Structure formats: C-alpha cells, structure tokens
Amino acid sequence: MGGQACVLYGAAEFSRDMDLAILASPANLSRLRAVLTELRAEVIAVPAFESKYLRKGHAVHFRCHAPEVNGLRIDVMTKMRGVDPFSKLWQRRVTLRAEGGSSYELMSLPDLVRAKKTQRDKDWPMIRRLVEADYFKYRGRPMPQQLQLWFLELRTPELLIELASKHPAVCRRLAKRRPLLKFAASNNSSGLIDALSEEEEAERLADRNYWSPLKAELEQLRHARLRRG
Amino acid sequence: MISAEELVGEEQAEWYSMTPMERWRESSKLWEVYLSMGGSLDPEPDTQSPFFDPEAPSSRPVDGRSGLRVVRRGGV
Image (cartoon, rainbow over all chains, first blue to last red; front, side, top):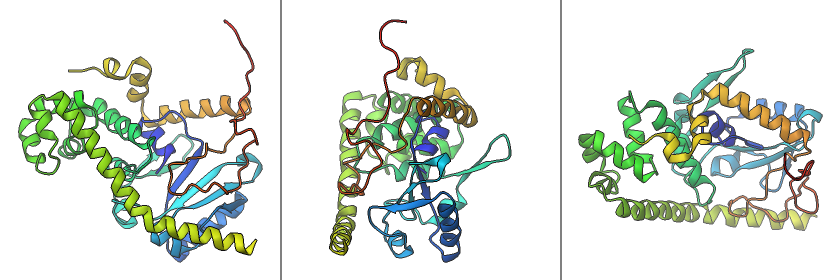
C-alpha cells in the first residue's frame, strides 16, 4: 500500500521500505509473524506487534536482519484515516501477476489515494502523480468510475480544466461532492489552484486531529519503554 | 489536449506510459544500482510522520547520510 504500490501505479520510481495493510485476525497475524521470523524482523520503536494496536490505527514498524533483506524496513497497518475497513479494501484490491508466477495484491487506486491524504508533505505530490498517471493512460476511453476518481481526486489544475470541458455534465454532478470543480468548469485556473491548496490544508488538519490521541498514546508507550529500560 | 510530456516532462511521461510490470522491472534495476553503490535500506527519518520517534534505533550511519558513496566526479 506504500511506495511499492506507488511504483506499480506509476507515481514513484523507487521505494526503500515496504508498507503492508493487513487484516488483524489471529490467523493472519500468526501467518505474518511466521514470515517476519523468517526475515529475522525485529520490532523497532513502539507499539509492540499486537492486534489491539493495529486495530486502533497504529502502525507497527519492523527492521529485517536476514542477509538478503538486511536493514529493510517493513511497516504494517490495518486501519487508516478516511479509508474503508480492510474487508472492503481487500474486495477492491488489484492483483498483478509477474513473470515467474509471483503476484502482488495492491490497494485499489482510489483507496490508495485516500490513504495518502496525510499531514506529510511528501504524500501530496504522490497523490498528484498517482491520479495523473491513471488519467494519461485512460483518458481516451474512461470508465464511469475512472471519471469519478479523476473529478474527485485529480490535483492538477490543467487536467481538471481539461476534464471539465470534456465532461461538463459529470462535472456539474460531482461539484456537489467537490465544490472546487466549479472553478474547473469555469476555466478559473487561479481560483482552482487556491481551492486545491485549501482542500489539501483541510485534509492535513483532519489528519493531525485524527492522530492527536494516537500520538499521545505512542508517547505514553515510549515513556513506559524507557522506564523499563 | 495537454500531453503528459508538456505537463511533467519526458522522463516522467515515459514512466507514466509503462505497464506496472515494466515499472517493477525498471525499479528493480534502480535497486540493484543503489545497493551496489552501498545504498542503505533504511528510509530517511520522516519527521512529519505521526509515527516518527526520535529515539527509535536506526541502522543508518551515525553521520546520517544515506550510505551512497561518490564513485566518480567530473565530466563524462
């Protein structure tokens, strides 16, 4: 669901760590634990690798020590702000099959975009590229759900204006959900840029508010860890 | 219609136009180069992340650099 997914969807060229969204069921965690043991992965930082933390929305961070992956960071999450529960993410996943029989289960593009709406600077250019890549690939023959994704998630003013000019009725309908589309419909580039910036800031603020109690809990866990030595 | 090249430049447009598996292969090549040059697998500390823990142990070198070494300087 992280950098590796962004590589496959076209937004990134390279990622040094691995982020996994998982179902926090006992059987699944047991399977994951076995794999992590094989990779000689240790938990770094807090919290501990326990389902209660994953279900609350924390991430558990690992570093691997097996020779072929020595130093590799793996982050595991099960719940993310603004994103549906895992069961729905799994239903909507995209499966890519590689040569040699391997397969990769990716979060769907709309879900990945939602998961990337965080307080971090680096996620916002990534969202822009994720949706741009999809738009350029399919704009000649879009499906209705792609039109919806682009109208609701494109962050590139030029492309929003182009899209609005080609599909004015869809734009009018979706402007009820994303008011800044009215600037795209009226070819108001500066209004659109300002509105995109406000939209981003509102999401960042929502993410900071969402994380506030979780960060307090992480702080308590860090203090407890220090007390234990 | 705006072309991808106009908007993001040729390199990024080429990346956009690849299939996911083509990107995976190209990214794997970057990995090989990166590791062969001594690149670290440890990500940069992300101080904006809500998970950021300044006291978390790191396998990164103490100078905080990525582990990449300059193997050649000057013109080609």
